[in-house]
Image 1 (cartoon, rainbow, N blue to C red):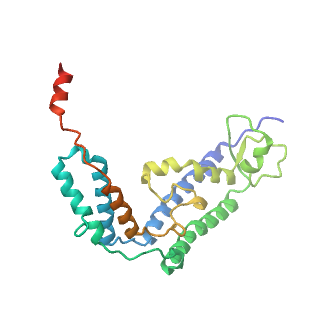
Image 2: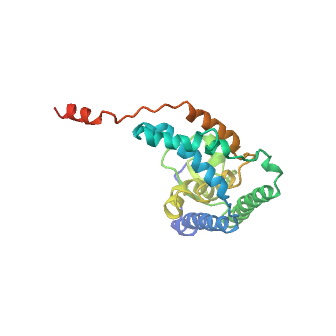
Image 3: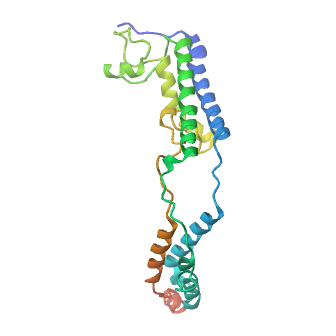
Length: 244
């Protein structure tokens, strides 16, 4: 088959416009997701409990660098049988099913609408406005198994080399290929970086909240068996020995 040459006008009227449209559409979708996203309010009690668990874990891991009196004071604060934080705090179990929460269902519906509806609209418009164009060619040979993926809208050209990329396929390649650009412009955590049909910005399914009462009990048991062994007891002698 004779070598094909594309009209230079395709570069300016099809190839680059598809890149720009896909990029701008991702930016708009990112800010639209931010506007319509509901602010998740963290309760003060949950923040306090989480920080208490973190402090206890740090005490277990790094308590050897504290003097014995400082270590026992902190352990007393958490684990004393009468006045300890983990023994006195009573929390209600929050093991309900999040899927039964109407606000959760509303958030999932909103996220799916923001992802799927714009994708259908922009994909249909691109197929209508740029259908039938060949936009570029990959710089290496491919087998004919790649034709359905790279030549959407040009399936009738059965003898065409599989290395050519149609306009519709170029649009879908840009959805994946522009992810690094979204990361540079919008930051690492953005709603445009993930492909629309693989977006992880919709609420997670059925993820129950942490049961703080069980977490307190487990942390109390873990801290209770920790003994203090001061790692800096003879640090002066070790330093002098190293300097000799």
